[in-house]
Image 1 (tube, rainbow, N blue to C red):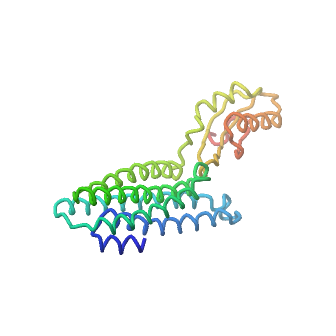
Image 2 (image 1 turned 60 degrees about the horizontal axis):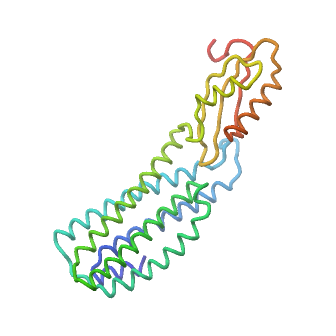
Length: 267
């Protein structure tokens, strides 16, 4: 980041400065991701019965907002550069951009594993991906400037990188917001879940008060009520319901209320 700031000032390249600004955000984002990951290792306590798993989602949410801020800065600066072109030293820009590209490729490959199962790692990887795209854009812009002398390519490519970052930021913001709002995860359809339980469980005549949400990525939580028929074996129903939830919907943490008469919540 420091090299890109110095190189951007010396060469006059917005692409390098944009990438350096993004790296500054990434330094904070990666630190936040690390802190969140460490928090999830802490055991649950009476006040935090689920532990600190939501810290991952909060970190991802903050990272997404930070990405929006970076995009806004890049676009504003690019517009100013297009209105008032700046001279650019292409050779300095190319050398710094190649160094940044090598660093970003290394970090991106390091974070690739585990990004599918951990929203926090995915957020960190998206930040680094933005840096990687910025470095590629800077290398391309430097090559064009050296061969043609056309300096507007520098802010134009910066805007292109900003658009790519914006797309990733929106996806990350949407996913983290859905978890924080406790929406049902994409992997579970509450209507289908209710229908499946009614069709499978013997001695159950109604399934209601179904609430399904994600604690964090890959950890689905569920609560519901099972209305039992007269004479139904409550233990057998509970055991079978847990099996169906685990086998068909991959839900291993659920709280089920068994009712032999009217639902006490509706009395």
